[in-house]
Amino acid sequence: MSAPTKARVSLADEVYAQLKSDIANFVLVPGDRFSEGEICDRLEVSRTPVRQALVRLQQEGQVEVLFRNGWRVLPLDFAKFDQLYDLRLLIETESVQRLCEGNTTGDAKASQAMLEQLSGIWLVPKSRRLRDNNQVSQLDEDFHCALVEATGNAEMLRVHRDITDRIRVIRKLDFTQGARIEATYEEHAKILQAILSKRTEQSRLLLKAHVESSQLEVRKITLHQLQMARLGKT
Image 1: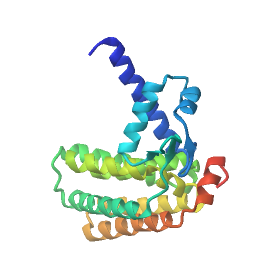
Image 2: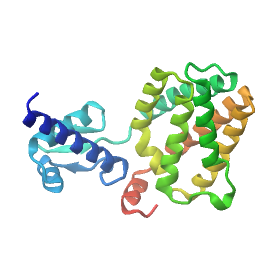
Image 3: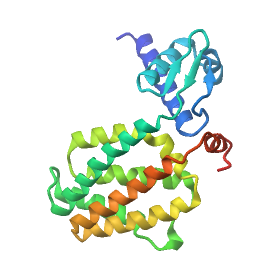
Image 4: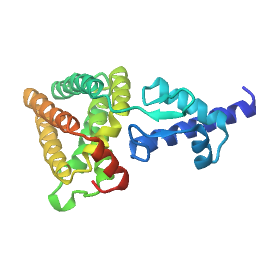
């Protein structure tokens, strides 16, 4: 691959990452329309990497091209999110069961170290809890990914990360509610304590209730909430 080609691919990746971040952080919200030219001007890049990035996002089901009328961020598909949450739940409950039973495929010491690291974040006094929505949202995502990673199953982790990537925008919206932060700390602490105590069934039930609670909140999301999130007023 020639140097100019590598540069174009790298720039397309950067544009893709920026647009994906824009969607996840409500700079672009479902239903927004825009043109390639507008993106080019905002990011100060040429049309080719923008088009490449948009095609990639289109393949992922995040945007769609409008005939002779630019592009649009796709509306939230709650039926699809329900399916993704169901698959996420299967992977995560299987993961906590394996952790409780010691049925991991990787280094047992590494798995234990991950759980101890999570404990240092979530098993803390209320006075040490973070209050920033974005920070807690990222820590929440990291918590669930770490539970799967600790099993040592690379394929489970790969699928789980793909699901995480696809539901990120609505999970971040969930964390615009202050009460959600407190609930997340309480629920994560209980899940971790159950895993560390090797209480398999309790771990599965606590995790299931935790994920399903988030899933129910997702179903309440409205266009108004999305617009307010863009303004930072939720």
